[in-house]
Amino acid sequence: MSNATAQVGSERPVVAGAVYAMTNDASENQVLVYRRNSKGLLTFHRPVLTHGRGSGGVLDPLDSQGSLALSEDNKFLFVANAGSGTISSFRVVPSGLVFVDQANSGGAQPLSIAIDGDLLYLLNNANITGFHILQNGSLSAIPASTRFLAAIAARDLGASDIVFSPNGSFLVLTERLANQIVVFPVEADGVTGTPVHNNSHGNTPFSCAFTPSGVLIVAEFAGGPDGGAASSYTIAMDGTLQLISGSVPTQGKAACWNVVTPDGKACVVTNSPSDTAALFSVSEAGELSFVNITSVGPNTFPIDTALTPDGLFLYTLNAKAGSISAYRLDESSRPGKRPRLTLTLLGSVSDGLTGSSGLNGLAAR
Image 1 (tube, rainbow, N blue to C red):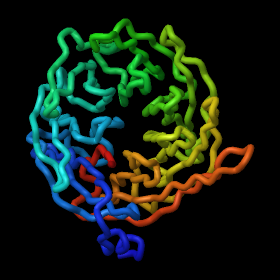
Image 2 (image 1 turned 180 degrees about the vertical axis):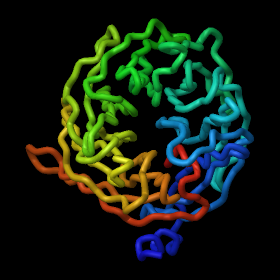
Image 3 (image 1 turned 60 degrees about the vertical axis):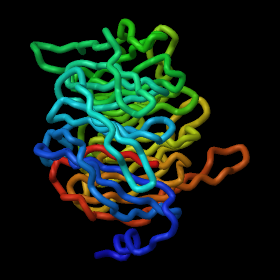
Image 4 (image 1 turned 90 degrees about the vertical axis):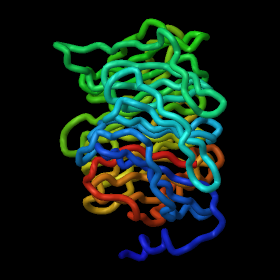
């Protein structure tokens, strides 16, 4: 055991929050609960049954971002059960999670969850379906909210991620096989309008995340040995995308997952096959600038990422190694210049996790 790994589980200051990961087990899906202390270090708490089934698999079987999602007030956790076509709701309590309910996903193989206030949309393999989050955390399906996605010869186009814009006016999803970013307007009743199909600037758009000001950042799987990239856009009122920064290299292969800091000044993208995390600065105008790259460790295959609400700690779910790595993300202001950004590895924890077992999904509070 490395010193960094030992450090994660050895200190037990007052619990400051939690991190959640999903086993995605095909016979009995579980959420693994980790307590987070004030230094960002994790201690395994316990597994919790979702009462649903995952997809199973080896490395990233869901090909998606956001299969776990916390409500905006961090009172509830929602989990996509890809194998049983359901979504589970949990109430967040000091002792961990309390199961609330399970709802039909409205389609096959739910992959990604987007939340805006009491509105939740679920991306299934071939459609999207909307729900209202009730006061107890259970879900109520919105009538006529299901929208089927485009397909070619009955083959889905590889929808990978779904997110709301900060003002809730748009719902955005990526279709990696079609090289498209689809924008749905959201009506007052929670139902989506006619989608606008935008061509991605780079190849294979995988995940997307918004800055608080409404800049959309998309990670691009692309191709080649170091072909990973990220692009940024604004969304016009008609749902069309306006490019800001086009395919800025992540200095690694197969950029897939990305997360934006709460202040919108930084973005982290994981290069899974390269076992690295790329750090970008984001200007007020939404321009991306590569800062540096951090090694997660050999044979880790980092996939899902999660940030604490204060933006201080970042976590990566390492699918091949069966571990979660913890980082500290620091921003130091410089008059007249972009902030100086550093990403420091604190350690990793492997308790409760099994490498190459189909792990997917990560959330932090």
